[in-house]
Length: 319
Image (cartoon, rainbow, N blue to C red):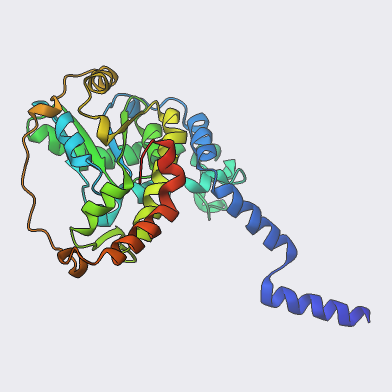
């Protein structure tokens, strides 16, 4: 009987792994969701990094497409500041660097003896060096150097003293990562009524990638899920990066404009002075061309409302 139980246990381990391994995997996976804990840990471990504290770019976050992010980008673009627009979006440069931070949610990694600074550097070939790391501050400096060469240096070459980036795919984890790299950066978070944003998006053909090549946004359910996730994060967490949250519908309000300019601490263009620029030819879907098909529109709106209503209500949006 004992041997039978032992055999069954070993068989289960063969198919599912040991209980200890499964418990560790589950705990690690749950901890990985607390990205802010990784940021706090890295802040303590890296301490003073002079390279990253001298930069103050502007980052514009939008809750998905067709939310007026380009309008806000143009408002913030000045004679000495360029705001890059969704640069190399399919390559996801910032998301991929951000994801390098996530493993630091695991407090058991990396071990202190992994770092070269903890070793005697004499006769390294006589030591166990399977895991040998540069310092964490050097890793973050390398991130900063990458961003410098890709975004800041080209801005300077073009004659701009300052720079920034506008994106529609970034979440709050990306904002926290950027705050770690650039503590003096400014962060704008933009939302728009999701019904209006979706109506605009679908008239553009519904063929943009949230994450290339796997996740194309083609339906109101997909669009609404993205909007709701980002809008909720922006509302609840923008204060963690000292950010400024604004609705697209309020941008032309003089009080909102004054608060925005005060937050940025540099002169920006008044919305009324931004000229209207025609967009490329609209790729209407089949039922968009026939406005008599009200039933399809009703189904679309129903799908969208299921995803966004709770968060939209918090912003005062009527759907």
